[in-house]
Image 1: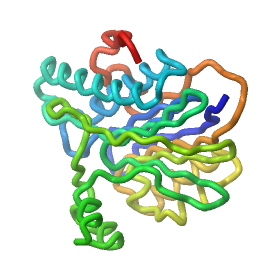
Image 2 (image 1 turned 120 degrees about the vertical axis):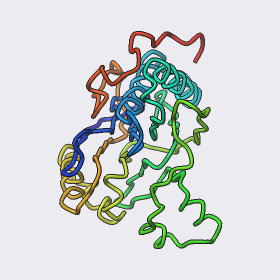
Image 3 (image 1 turned 90 degrees about the vertical axis):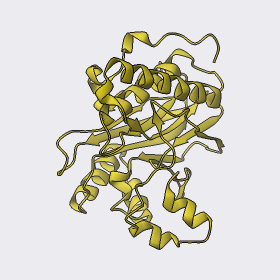
Image 4 (image 1 turned 120 degrees about the horizontal axis):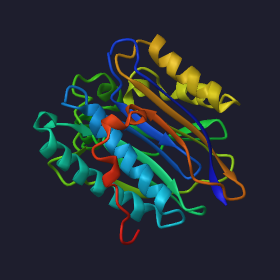
Length: 269
């Protein structure tokens, strides 16, 4: 049965006072969420979204990965909407989400915003996700080069997010993964300062914990102004295991989650 072996780390960083990143890493689900900087209660948006997605994945093992992810993202939006009703000062809260879920055979990727997923195979790195940002749209239209996009003052303007006002529109895609592949999921606190070449070198360190720690430290030493969250996971073929996992960042504090007791089972997944 295909699954993940993982290590993960989330760091507030050297500039911010609080961590608005959240995430989850388990044998069947990996996800990172970055509360939109400057918006109210970014940590609530990211923690709630990561909580709902991980709860759905744990509650429906072996189900269709893209259906589970798509419905969980919609449910996270509903919880954020409720959160604003409960506390109007949260108006404007939003988060990115990048998640990979497996049913033991297939792998599905859900993407909202600009947190990234990479595949490292045979020492080469390839970005699996596509940034939903203004500058990426301009690159796609031929109005900007990737090099210009990387230094643009508008590079953090996301076109899609999980929030309380707009129905989320995730990009959903199947991934072709195999045992021996390594996945790297991360927030832009990492990719803002480290090029893909550095991600490939540090991400291929034999010990996943070393890879995660060195990636975070390299980002902080490189001048990252943001929170930094990294998940490093290897694809393995092994006997089924219980689908627990590690909670990251703001999601470790249930006070950041809108009504955790209100996560009810879906009628179908």
